[in-house]
Length: 125
Image (tube, rainbow, N blue to C red; front, side, top):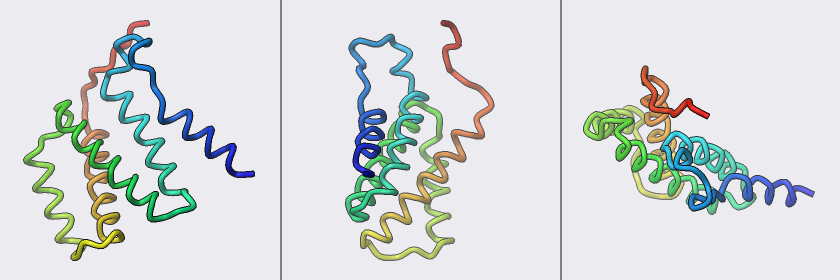
């Protein structure tokens, strides 16, 4: 009963036809939105280990996208990440620890993205 809904979520959030759409879809803001949907999906997967691995991979992708699109300063981000991990007293490298680190990364990335006062969205139709 849950499977059709899961397939709908996956279909709606994982596919984007870059080649047949206009260039606005290449805007990093669109990708952030799509990745947010995928991250939520990862947290409700039946296989938690698989969901955690996908979550970690997507957060790494968001990190790369935020830094490369200059929506976040890499040096400041790395400093803040190091401070947050120390503050949370996270040690080790098992999957649970990596998931906690990924959640901290995503929290910092979202904070930086949502605090931006300017936008580079194309508002023309």
